[in-house]
Amino acid sequence: MPQQYDYIEMKFPSSAEYVGLIRLTLSGVLSRAGASYDQIEDSKIAVSEAVTNAVKHAYGDDETGEVLIGFAIYSNKVEIIVADHGQSFNYEEVKEELGPYSEDDNVNYLREGGLGLFLIETLMDEVYLKKDPGVTISMTKFINESQVHLNGETIVNR
Amino acid sequence: MNINIDTTEKEQEFVVVLEGELDVYTAPELQKVLEPIRQSGSHDIRIDLTDVSYMDSTGLGIFVGTLKDLNQHDREMYVTGVSKRILRLFEITGLRDLMHINEASEVE
Image (cartoon, rainbow over all chains, first blue to last red; front, side, top):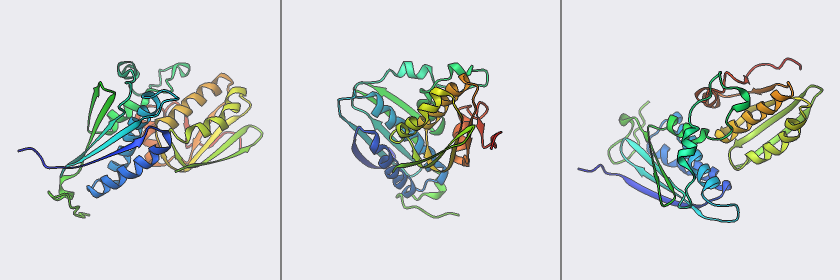
């Protein structure tokens, strides 16, 4: 039997000024789902990174578009979907730059970009990426099951 | 959702105190403030993050770029007031060992 979930979907203008509002929304959704402070903060960074990618790469400077955010709220996890619906950025290229810095890296060759996807993969429990049309990133945070009732009501358990 | 940037120019050091959220929206403001010092290498740069409630890779990117530029001029960059949450970002990206984080500067 498939797991039950509630689904919330929102569209935001593909513009940097809305990334903060998306974080606020995410924070509310995760808090209601019973996520811990650290789980919420990690997810805020990961989702911001995905939206930042969408805002920076999906549309040209004079184009405007939309970023779609979906939240699937399960009893034990929240899956967040970010879709840019625009032209895809070169994921393979970006992925090659993934990874932490090391002390052996010559300072002159340090990457200034490319950390976003690394952070998404590090901070979230499951990450999937789909291209065409546009780029869709799915990020899942598992939430301590003992904190959440089956119907999604939060049980304070401290 | 905004950022306040306070700057103080000392003899050796350019001090930047940030308050608010550092992300893709607010980062260009910080870039603008840092750019002249990065280019000229006239000062060390100290960035105070005590009142920064949120930061992501956009902020890390600025610090990496600033560090690169300052190193060219034999200048130092200090990042202070880094909270546990934000320190974690420096740690998982490996940047903690490359920068002066939460260290006192040499010249006050």
